[in-house]
Length: 251
Image 1 (cartoon, rainbow, N blue to C red):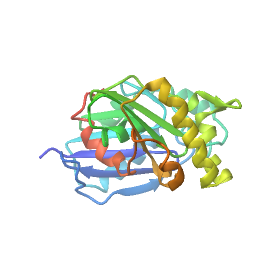
Image 2 (spheres, rainbow, N blue to C red; image 1 turned 180 degrees about the vertical axis):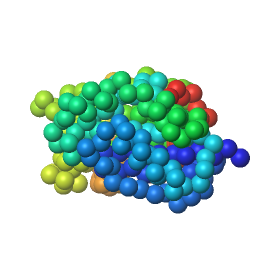
Image 3 (cartoon, rainbow, N blue to C red; image 1 turned 135 degrees about the vertical axis):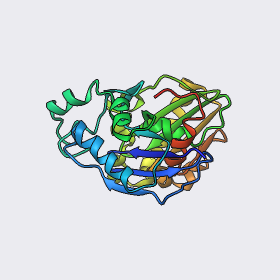
Image 4 (cartoon, rainbow, N blue to C red; image 1 turned 90 degrees about the vertical axis):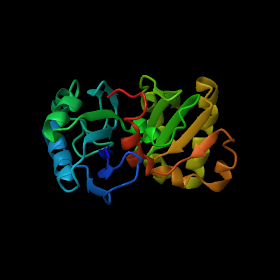
């Protein structure tokens, strides 16, 4: 049976497990805080160290924040900062990360075939039905976004950086910082406004909302989101690591 090393790289933590083809975890997931400042070398070493604590796998899937195109970093928002999200950007890290071939570096380090995708795209792979236009939004440090059409991964859109209201991006409008500042009730109303605003843009058949902060959406807002909206567990990020190899992804 083919096994997959699944690694979910976030702004605050990096989590990993090994799964079988059915998406069942073969090892208890392990997590470490994301180290900062995070050079590309330290990133690869951190993932190698995590993998060493887990059973050997036949292949790997890595999800990470930012614009990842064919396994190469176009831009990543958190890993170029001094101490993590919302801290000072370090020019030397921007230079290291932009154009960094993560796929090649990790394949060499792991010694197994590796797919590298945006973290929301991996999360989406764990929940989509593979029918129609399916949009996945993940709520965490910021906003993650993935689009699948008939099970085929569409080119990534960095929705997190798009303007939404008052000159704010989606990251700053509904990210973790604003949830803590506003409280869950007011923040949830913002989520409802975002869903209503994006519905005519994407005309999805199904919208999935996941990520660690999806659990903070209040019941009253959940009841108003619509029958085309589904809340999914954050464990999808691990399951998606295995399913990404069965779908039409490119990483």
